[in-house]
Length: 364
Image (cartoon, rainbow, N blue to C red; front, side):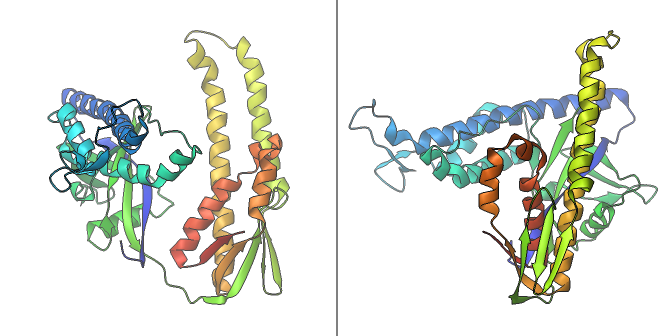
């Protein structure tokens, strides 16, 4: 990927585009089987990569055992009969070939090795435990597998993935999903490695798209200093001007009100009518969990967008988060702050939006 482009991911609900009930059932059975194989394969890959990385620490092996992880055909001291990256792909092929498309196996192997290489130093220092993948993990595939087309009403989009027909559901679409799909359809933007995720019987396409960055006229010598806190989600100073984005009453108190409503329901759940056991009693609680999550996510997107808009308007090429590391250390010891101050999610959204417009972000 070139330096002037970036990859965005959009979550789009899709349906199996088939009216035949038997075929639909077969398609769903196939997807669930692939999901299970992807989950098993991902844990196998990460485990084998970790074992290979730490082979030299297996002190209980004989002293004359070779421990150089290299292809023996290229290095006489090597213990592998292929490249290290290909070892886990061959492992996946030996177990799952014929049961799942090889494109999916290749994407699992490539992605897992990439994640492992990014975390290997943390594993060595003991700062992280080995990743563990769950049964609901997405099914990855390469971007070339998607060929979009318009549906009969010229409103939604259709595509076939490994011979399974899908149709998108965009609804009113107040976001940019329809525009991005249209641009991908005519070839203006590139579809990258994406995934299919199944959540409670619903299917979602996690579509990755490579877009050019929005070029803005920014000046590196103009610095925006931002501070994140629970009193004011973002306070920013640019030159002689200061701005406050959001406030405690708007964000924290509303969030706590949702938590309080959930707590009241939790107390009353013991007296709810039975019938379907735990699922029936927990239904309203799950609704409030989702409500809080959506509220926080919406507010963080709004705050981060307003911050970047202020920076662009002032032509600030550098964004400095002041004293953020110390604040995070303090928050770790305060249960209230840890529960109600979503600093990590806010920072991630600021990073993403700053990268889109070319602002250099520094965390102090």
